[in-house]
Image 1: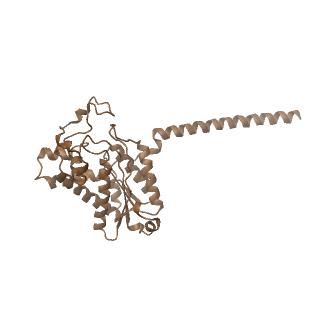
Image 2: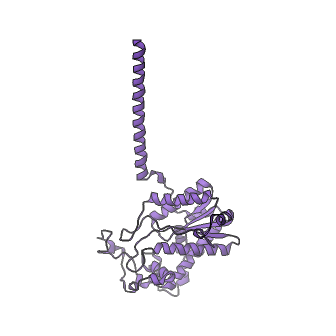
Image 3: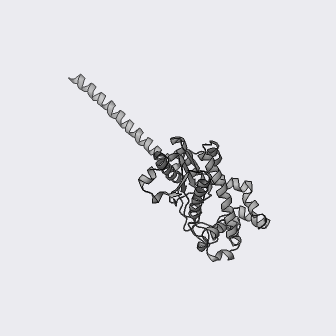
Length: 315
């Protein structure tokens, strides 16, 4: 496995474009309660990028995994202190332009890896990957939503933990509540030193706990849902392994030129992001300016014709 930020351009240029898969961790800074770090989603995305790269290399001889530095941006974050939220069109643009740069360099396989499961963020990444794929006729995917759905519906996590967790606790784990049991378990496995000990004392909170909360303040809500106190690194390890296995299978399918991989990785509808509000205003302003220039030019042309006619008659 290689890391883009550690290579020189000749080393990058020497890679076989048809046997290199580029992994791009792409998740925002977002609050995760009083017990998990603000960078939780990016920590998870970076780990998945590395783990997927290793697994794909193990399954396909001659394939090289190339991991990019993490992109700490995203949409659909919880509006709490520490969260950095971007608009969908901006996330789409950043992901699209990264994909374009890599596609122009000749790379054929690009995977956006994400640890932030906001529908808005997933929508932007999937659409960016689809745009790059269509424009440059390569394989770019953002499969996080598809992988998560496949694992949850397929029951891989439940099968791995069926004899170690109570039914109600397993249901809580699979709910994937924000900063709840699942994310706490994953971070206890990946970076236990970053999980604050207070997690074991936090009471369970339902989504109703957010009622009356006004955002950007910890008053009335502490920034998590579910039961962080049930978190355990063992549960996190099982969940990660199930997700990595499913993700690697999808990526190997893509490398094998199976067109079904792109369809399987794309759950959200295609959206014309160029029609977002900001761009619509820009296009509207440009149209008004263009119309104004046209009117002025027409008036000037008409006045010129009148003057020319008057001069010809006078002389």
